[in-house]
Image (cartoon, rainbow, N blue to C red; front, top):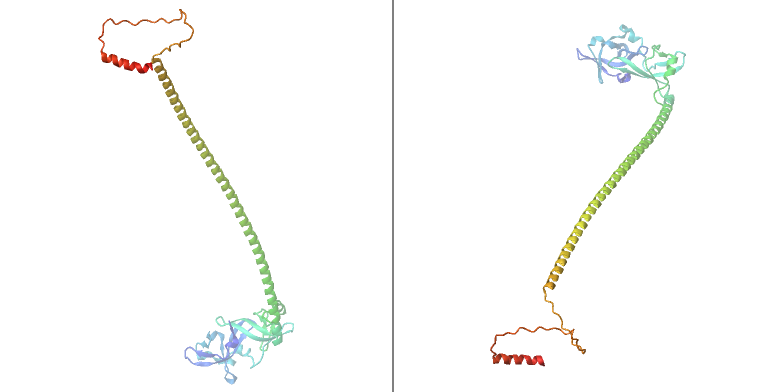
Length: 326
């Protein structure tokens, strides 16, 4: 969009001749239909006009037309002459009921499509400061004359003032504050709900972990108890085997000892049986033995073969008998 005041003063250049056709003095628009009618170049008797259809481009620094011939005197262009505004004149805005709305202060156009997009009506500095400008689109039923624009009442009431002002700003700020408070409240509720859901999820996770830990601990305890039972069973079996082996060893040693003892007793008995038994001579008593009790002695057999006696042997026999007598 472009405000028409920014176009006033620009040069109009012909593309064919490359010549300056003139400077823009006024942009003529039709607010009843929302179109750009054309341009008025120069002032006084030398004023000329260029219709919108002859404009090639509205640039930032110049307006380009095809040739110098498109610029004609205003008397030949009644559509421009009828809407030409006197110098420094104001275009007033009224409702159809006769209520003065203000002065048309700004008009915005699309420089490519050559149409009016919106225009603003000012009610004076103080009212504009308090209530803002009245921003209007092209409304059906609008009348655009040389001195005033007549607007339908109902549509103006529906539109209201839309462009700032302290009151509008305050209302806008109030609306913004209310919206922000509402958003903060909604965010707080969402945050609270999210926190609640998070806590619930965390609690659920903790419960699941505790359950799994308990189950794991139970399984671990069961496994440990099973291992202990198995170890105790193995230890018992090992102890029983060791005791059995020790008992067997003891039994074997006792059996060997008994056998050796029996063997020793047997050998001792055999030795006793083989040894000669000597009868002890009865001691002499003072009583005279009875004839029946006197022992019968056998006389040794007499060796009839005489043996020569040797003197040395007899002497030795005498010597040996002496200590025995003593």
